[in-house]
Amino acid sequence: MNAVLTSSPNVWRASLMLALVTLLGFGLLYSLVATGMGGLLFPAQAKGSLIEGEGRVIGSSLVAQPFADDGYFQSRPSSAGYDVMALAGSNQARTNTDLRARIDEARAAVAAREGVAPADVPGDLVTQSGGGIDPHLSPAAVRIQIARIARARGVDAAVIERLVTAHTEGKQFGLFGEPRVNVLELNLALDAELPTPSSR
Image (cartoon, rainbow, N blue to C red):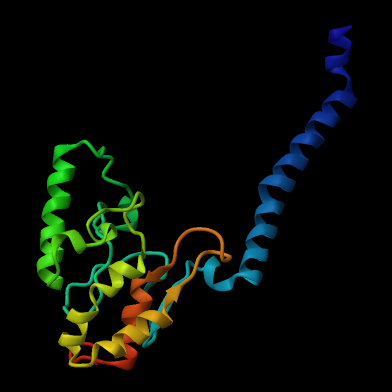
């Protein structure tokens, strides 16, 4: 009985049709439709949320970049060295003595740079995100840098504060996550409104 069923042309035809429909329908057609719909509905996101300026790609709003100049907001530390091909967290536990030492060292450096007490340094300025390239900082981590940037750019701190407020994003859909600021977008706004000699 089993031999008859196995050799039946109808069984083979049904099996081949199922394989064909699965391969073409779910493997090819679904991918094409999903990619096409994504490109139509969310064109910027589908292309990597790239930010362009002066005819070239400056970066992505999804990827953190390092900023060394005093006239810029500093990004969150990256265990991947801001390399998108090496995304990773440090994988060190809270009890790890090396992690504690690194955080204490980073906190002291940030406190000295911003002219504040180490206890006032927000955690996201000294800790690394799980992916290593988190482009956002908390409003507190951004605001603690305002005085330094105002001095470096020779403007009143209120001018920088206004830009920070304008670039502070609320909770997702008003419910999820916390308010945040995209550092790259904020720094580009700084250059657009208050160009420094090095950014002109």
